[in-house]
Length: 176
View 1: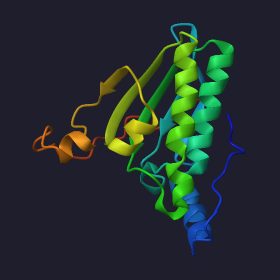
View 2: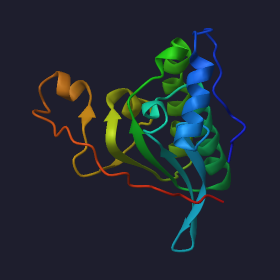
View 3: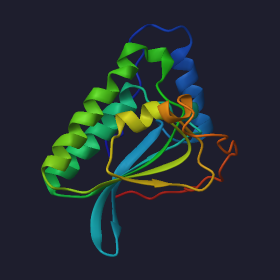
């Protein structure tokens, strides 16, 4: 779903297109998030899975657009949304365009919530505070050994986080 949404180089960052192209070949995905629909016990859901193997799962404008399109589709169709995060944060090569994704995804999720629909965020390792801010949620599930770098850690509320790599949860995901 929404595979036509691709990374651009809005700041003409030198070597960015080459980095994206080589990462697409290595990671065997076109972007840091794959979105689509699936079924859980016969109930259709909208799902997004971020891939830390694609530029550390960083959220560039294409990632934000794919997630926004997924959530808007789910709202229109009355579907719950599940997003599995694994991201090192904003994609710096896109500068402010990357940072603007927070407003866009947050508003789509707000409209989804206002429609009375469920959204569940499953945080995996790594997920940083910026991504949790971009995908705000009332229901958040944490994966074992998650390293959550956020304002809580900066304030000393999260002491000595486990710094371990979790095994890849999703080796293959089939979407319809």
